[in-house]
Length: 354
Image (cartoon, rainbow, N blue to C red):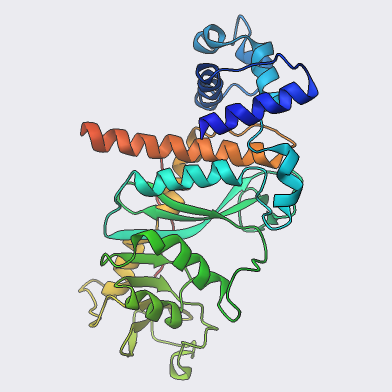
């Protein structure tokens, strides 16, 4: 992966600046280390990173500022001469090769636990690209959206896909949500794992597909889904009451967290739904969902703590920043797994249902 970045960066520099321009692999690694250090030190201005008063001695001693800017100017992730042809079928062509290597490494380097969480991540960016997203509910409204599968316990990023808009390769009639979950979970199916999703992804047809691959699902269901029986749709329920509906593939729990607020949980791992002895009488499906749903949200909080993102006009560089953030978190998880140390990175809790 680094060799590819080195090759295409040198190619771009030779074509646009100097035929004798060169960057060896250690220098590229030094460049990436400065990118990471800038995220850790949180010095907003590039100039200040090398200043006598505010500068970081490690950054100053690693590389001159002008050389860092020179590499950043020429940083490329693909063969520019063939990009236009590849872009006809691949909107991610400018970085897809490097991105694919990164994702392959994520999949092969770690064996996740029994619970995997699938959710979306919006990486903040306002660069011009055809798949930039606007999501009003996010803290940063604009960005590049990624679908992420994350190990619940360690928050290791197991698999990740960029959202590039309409996919011509998606089978006709298949929901986007089902396609995303099946693609993210493909390397981890047939192992008896469970995947936790929110109401965008969860459906009975997805539960059936996963069960055929020895994988269960636990997730909230949107009340407008066809899976919700008509008898479960009425709003005025008594507070803390539970209604259960079952099929051969899954169990649907309708729990009234408030008088006019009903939470629907679909589970293919629970054949029996039980309520606890507390005042709220929560079903075990709701309790387990609250425990297992936070993988991606907490992961996103952790990578934002030391985010390396800086202003850029090139969307491949924005994706590269997100890749470094994810790689740093995964490296931390692997370091802990290999050494047995327990060092917690910052990361908060997420909102519970019910």
